[in-house]
Length: 345
Image 1 (cartoon, rainbow, N blue to C red):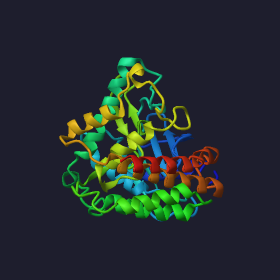
Image 2 (image 1 turned 45 degrees about the vertical axis):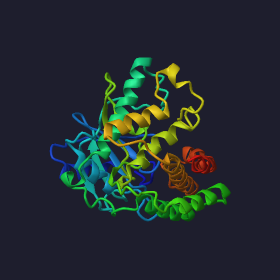
Image 3 (image 1 turned 120 degrees about the horizontal axis):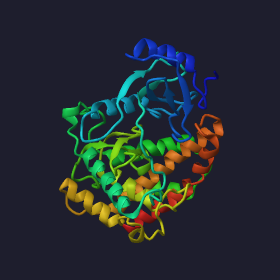
Image 4 (image 1 turned 90 degrees about the vertical axis):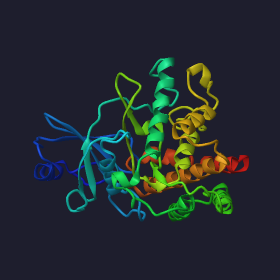
């Protein structure tokens, strides 16, 4: 089978798993998930088991992007903790097997909610689902890095500054047009960086925490697994919290997947303030000052990520090129919202 972002050499994968995954037996079939823009993701099925394979896309990639090895490591480290993750089995870093690195984990049956309005469930369950989302986020930030073996999972301190520098470089490397709002946002963030992390808080961070990166129980408002750990590192936890609020400020529907203009009380959903307050209570921390800065940072980082998706779509390396171009169209929108957040404080 052709070895590109849309396909998988099933024969090569089956041969590898037979040699390296205890208890595995074929025959093997594979089906690509439509979502998962950054790292192509496939469901692997046999007569007795179901797995998920996440691979780096083939082709020329930006430095440090598509870090499937980091995804594998963090999920392995969190196994058995208060943070629900899928059981990972093996990591293959030999590009000769299928053309790029990959890892294999258990398939977790459950519900993935792509719309934070949660139209699939009744009103009382909506608040419980969002409450569990809040619980899991606080659990991620409460993990003892030393206990789970992740003390060296990221550089010490200066997370926001480091990430701003990194994603500024990534954005410039994948830029396809001039976006004045993005240029202004990068400059505005740089001006505000001094002293913003004065508390020095340093925790595990997910890097892309939102409800559609979670699998919930088929019958209960309980998270069974947090997905897509590619951007995880050691950093400032408020970046993760702001990432949730950032998503909710986007338009509702399949493109924005947000809650802008939605009557949350009528739907049984918490306000931004209520979600933030519950998080602070769970972690035992005081009211957050200058939350707008962290929100602006999240809008900037997502704009840079989406620009990379757009560039890969144009280059023919995207997991889903058509959707990649649609997502890329949001780069100016995110940049403008980031500027608004920075001004609001």
